[in-house]
Image (cartoon, rainbow, N blue to C red):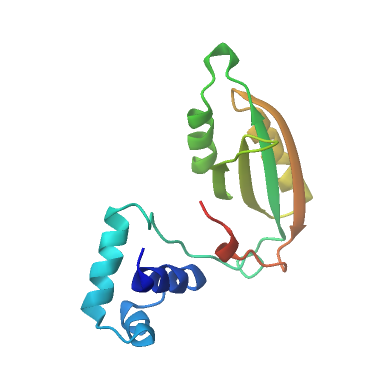
Length: 150
């Protein structure tokens, strides 16, 4: 990665909606140069995508829940299938494999504690899910995507 590539990745980490024109102005490069570097970074797999971060509270959610999930491969369960199932579930905003104490991490927006409980039950019923631990925090506490490398 060269200096311009680093500038592009850092700028987009702070604000994934930042225009190529603004990034070019910050880096004192042409917009076409920034676009070309961005496209090369995508081709090399250095940039895998971007996302929009919503304010959970403003769109009617009361909180955010983190589920740490342990999986089992007995009876033919596949961790990738579990992950795909989680990604397709409503209210799941992040689902990823992890290294460490748990196998998967899921972040979900929740309406209230009964919704949180129901979501935990639905996750527990996915074949191959062995154990779940979870935490919850109020929606007014913002999620900062800058700290999530997915």
